[in-house]
Image (tube, rainbow, N blue to C red; front, side, top):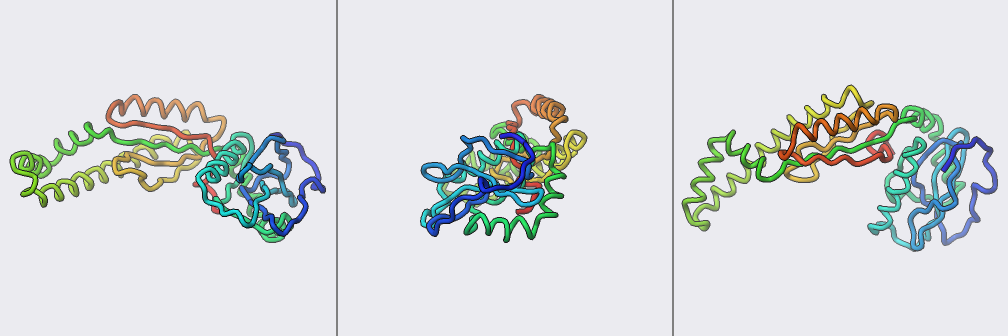
Length: 262
């Protein structure tokens, strides 16, 4: 992929066929050229091309109108293409499954009516990419913390140990609820600490919903390209401080899904 200013031309359009629709991946600047090997959804994967209008363009490919979307490989192809593009140029990702009838409809119904807002949004994310920090409490350390902090949890644990399983059903349920509540409080505190910690090296943060009951933090960050080393260094420092207590994973760079509305 490269950036080279050019005029829209016949090459931006595919032959209109009644059995083919136009799958739209995202919005990007007009001055972008796609490589010949860029592929999207489909079986076999369809060649990706660009539909231009004014200062913006849409990243599209053909899709058979009779072919249902939703397979895992389609979602992977959608996200992989957008993440690859986002690593080089600003892109506003559309949600998976956005289909329009023709390239002309992409211009008339999507690009033209929203041209100015899309152009402004692209300028806001220029030189930035999204990263997602996923932190998860290790099972044994977090249970030890819960028991050390809650007398009620310790009492319930001891009673469960002393009595047969069939007579401690209510105690087990209460202990599970208590553990869930305490971990949720820990998650809230640790998530806020993560957001505060990374504020100096990021351009924005969005707290995501937990994806697991032991999540310690699940946060999307918008990071300027020239601050990426600082950001990744801060992640390593956090990983070192949390140690075996929390597993920290960093995903990205990726398209800024959490920072655009599509």
